[in-house]
Image (cartoon, rainbow, N blue to C red; front, side):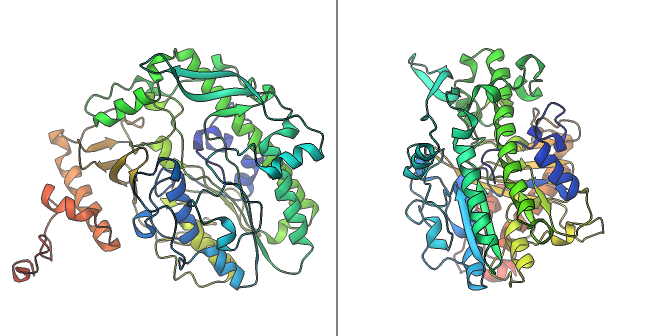
Length: 483
């Protein structure tokens, strides 16, 4: 699992310049999901959804600790998690790398072996990493050639990228892969089945990599995203504000090209390290009876829509992510176009382990999709957002052609992804879109009602959601009118 990873950085998803042979091979021998979505484009809530099999509104861990503005900061002590279910079924269960599922409760509290690595980015001052450097006579972490914009007061903006003055063997990514290989070796020597999750902190910004990856791609060969032409006309005002927060307009486009090139280099570094782990699997004889997943928590803007990071905008850049799955004995080279979710990993893991998936209420097993046979599946997907730097509730429904985003405090958004795949033109108020707008609004409303997501209450009084079978005032005094 990576963090903040765009699907279009991989060769298997169409990037002709990508240096991702390991992940491309995983797709060639397994299943590639072309419509794999995160339930929410923010680290902690997405990771909590994977752990619990529950949508964010249900598990209620809705924000990262670092930017929390009043939401809960940990899952409750009695929260079911797939990892504890695996432990109870006799599995070894390990996690190497980023945890970030809450603040006080750590991976060990949910049954995972492995070093406790807190925080949102590489904890380069962690004692276990420092011991690794010392044991291998490797130099310490040091960066230079920083890339960042300028704040309105003339001060430096957020750090976006920098060169790392370390060899590859000293990088945090190499350290994580090494620890994962060590755990694989330990687990392979025991008679128990195992689950091992390797969570890289990258390619989340800032992109901090050694020279060979910082300079791997020529910026002049980088094609800028078409949404770099974003004007924010007809869009929620928060998007322009967020662009200013990331100081996008204070940097020339040549810098954006370089940032994208470095981001691709970061992905290439991670791909190489995943290759080391896959080689260890083969060496240990684990390939024929071990399923392998690859995905991330959410995507990354990297200049798209004149934005960086992720945030209060439900564009494909941060909601559609890479998703690969290889199950031993499966048909190779399968490509699926169903709408699936990071949430669906939970039920998939449980099915592969032969465990009852009942507690994973919002998760569906992907095992039936690891083939070319027809499988009944929903024709749309619903995602949610609750805020990052500030509370900002949103809900989204995506179909084959259209995407509707409901923004309670601003203008709603509707995109025709056939004619406008870059989501530049908001057609929500266009008269000719009335039928589509109404149909999607009613479908979203019904999905939220069926799930128990109370966001639907706000929609009842604002939009034509069709007939309701309950008293929307919740007064309990006029139920007969709505039966």
